[in-house]
Image (tube, rainbow, N blue to C red; front, side, top):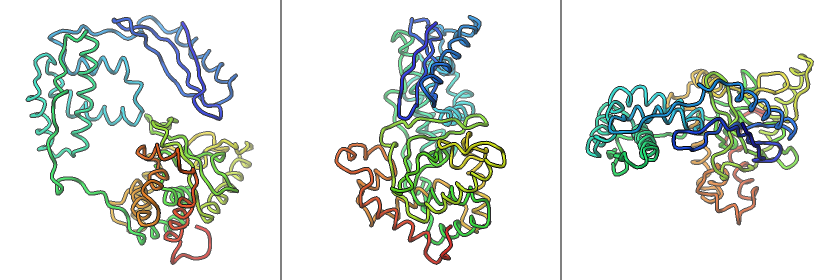
Length: 393
């Protein structure tokens, strides 16, 4: 039994890997886990994981699938769950599980891969469209089928075909695609006004998202150590995902998601107010407010990140109180940032600020916090705060 560890990011973020066995083809199977802490603490956690795996019964090793003409799509997905499913993020597995359960397993999933043609698969996609599935849902269904069949082909020694490879998706006309609407400045200000009457956590959370355009999971992962109070910037380098009732830390998929963004003085003031409240909560619980604690944590000391779905539900209630249309969601505030900044800064800087992967190469010749980005922060703040009282949000 063996384990290894490597530092994946400063400060003190490690990837732990534990060997758990081999599949029928001899390919090694590992368990991966991200750990945040000192090197010594990471070594202790790795030793615990290795001991845990060594104590596991042999039957815990994944069973292999016999690949042949009778192998179905469901068989391939089952094998994928055993060998490789853990590489997906928790939010992705939840979405995939729902699609598999409702649309794949009871229908095309029962079909033998060897007897499935591209014509059959494209007919299935058009049936899903007629049932009312969106373009993105059908695209995700194709991604699941393609991955399962690609793995089945490889694991069968190329004896099984991949009937998904040459398929095409149906075409959705413009009037068939759901529109994503950016909220108006009036709607954003209504949300901010209403949030001031309630929980400071939600008020500050909303302010940070509107002011920076960061994703929900990125805001949930914000730590006090990520805030540069003097430089008026926020460092974004982690994300929180909902995972079966609890929150899990996720490393960014691309380097473009790791970024620093400028923030305005009013947003900093709101964060300072929340830090004072969090300090009082920690003091009352006789614990210390961690320097590396989560900003929007409801746990004294900030040890546990907030659960993303809880904040989404709170936003829905806030939206009702503010009398804002139902087609505005928490993620719509990210669209607000993107839409509002169109005439203010260059497309390249906007992509860098929002963490889009298409802007990754621009980092070689653009300062992380440029004058453009500071102008973006000030412009968004002016929109949020217009027609507001002078008191901080």
